[in-house]
Image (cartoon, rainbow, N blue to C red; front, side):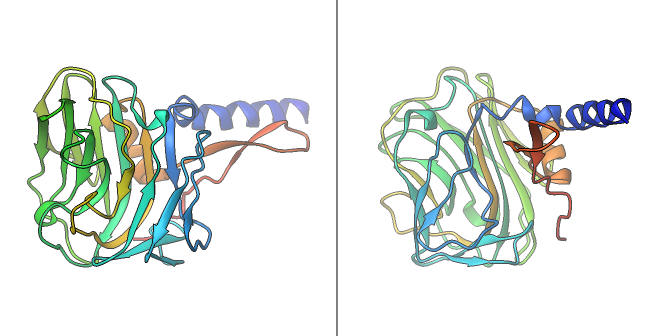
Length: 253
């Protein structure tokens, strides 16, 4: 029995080790599994909780619950924290998004500050994805996607910056890239989700599984997160001092 338990534990750890390496590098994780009112709960160790305005929780997310943005007044504002200044020249943003429409401008998945504050961002102009970083005030590099998203369809979105280029992914496939070197410009602005900072440009659709990391993850890891969902470690009591909580394997189409 002891041998069986040991083998099971090793297999479990092996199957989940990819995310284990990223747990400390995750600086914001909104799963939206439980009903929320005015606060988005960050499950990372940094507790970057966000203030929700006019967004409604739904149980019909891509995986469990999600948050619906109305394209007119819905947003999450996350106060500045040093953890939200990524790891110098590395950054990853991932999310599931089901658009209801494609408003004009650059509706935001997530961005650090306004244009003038020159941070980083991931948005959806014209129903296509776009990722950008500033390496100095006013010095932006922008990767533009080429594939339109479909309305009322879940899409997995990802943006990666590795200090050499920005890459953006739609449904696990590379959709745009641009070369850029250097550390990401630092600012003390809020992170805006669903709204373009101080401009009246809004996201219209349902958002789920939003994660920001201070490292650049691989295309294979993006695809694994898309296919298998996100897992994270939790401490428990019982025979094992540590187990793995919540592996999102039942993903809705």
